[in-house]
Image (cartoon, one colour):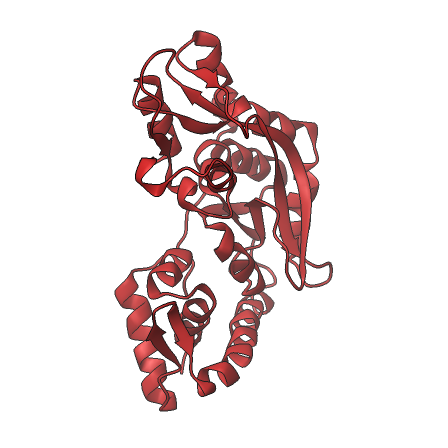
Length: 302
């Protein structure tokens, strides 16, 4: 029995599917399935069974889940404990829009100021609490998260608007992958407007969705300050809807004091600085080339 096997079990149990667990852990679905199969053979129990609503815990799986969650978290703590002299590390997970537009310049500036080895990853809202409590992420930035042992702090207020080309059809909604997250801001907007799934088109990223909107393919949700330059140039115009402009906030979520890492505290303090706020408001302005240090992207797996 290994920590990788226990981690696969915990993520499948919490997220409800092998696919969701693989996405959160940054590995392939076969890797998760193989780890789960090995754990089942070792313990002599299926642990999880398929149902119409997803994966369901067996009685043995229910008894194991709490213990396995603690073991995965303790494994991450053990690695940190035996490497006290190693450079401080930070792993930040963000929703798709922030990861695409804000993460790069924000983490580069943090690394430059704190001389820290910070990396970033993308996660759906439902995955973030588990990544934090499993100690596989230090900070989650995106929608507000609630749950035992979690603390969410607002870091930036903004507005969600609908944008489209000045002329053209507006019967389809164009979103990036984060638009499929029901707990994300774009997902909440589509739900408020009761947009049918057949009228939603998903693009590889949010930039591609905005480009398609500018070409007249439909309407796209957008954080107002992230599309301000396109609005000024007239490439996009704001479209009135019953739910926009919608006030939203970006939050930084961490574990409670005493259980979170020192690097998480450092990043929280950094997010309150004027420089961090400026980067989040105007990520297109970037940072000077001499100060640029690209973040390291890692898969969350052991």
